[in-house]
Amino acid sequence: MTAQELATSLQGRLIVSCQAPPGDPMRETGTLVRLARSAVAGGGAAIRANEPAVVAAIVEAVDLPVIGLWKDGDVGVCITPTVRHALAIVEAGAAVVAADATDRPRPDGSSFAELVAAVHGAGALVMADVSTLAEGIAAAGQGADFVSTTLSGYVPGTPEQTGPDLELVAALSAAIDVPVVTEGRVNTPEDAAAALARGAHSIVVGTGCGARRRRPRSGRRPWRRRGPSPIRSGRCS
Image (cartoon, rainbow, N blue to C red; front, side, top):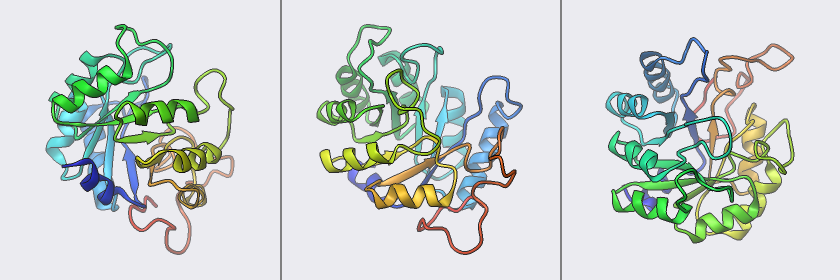
């Protein structure tokens, strides 16, 4: 699948993040595969998944593009931090490798551009997870096929927010030609609609789609609402 073909299939739709943090009872491959199957049944456009074994199992189980990553560590660059991690995700069958594209040093001393070249050489696409406008512009310039706001609010120096970073979405959408994906704190259909209105190409939801570990203070499931979703497909209610 080319970048253009994938972009077309994702436009205006939900990418469902089928992940669970350490210690979560859902952090088990079979459970995450079932979550991915549920995402397919609900109209999701793609799956985002962590670790080679889980990526491979989901690729085998569902007929949707899988955006794979490999979280390793909990300090600094940990989302697909090296070329080795990236190629392992390609080997697991991911159509897209998501990787940290912030300006922090990578543990193997490589550049993001080198990771992009390795993944493209292996036949897959790259989603750059960024925290700032400058990082997104740089990532697009280094060949990223998609740029995501994943790390905004999680990297020192970026603003903490309770919802998606809509200012970053709008700025990236105006500044770069590659599709901009909104990820991070998308808790309601209104959040998703606001991101799309500001130029997001598609939306990643994880905790907001099923709320595995936490719920809003109201106690209601964040994606449950009356009436149609503001997104063309991929309801999670």
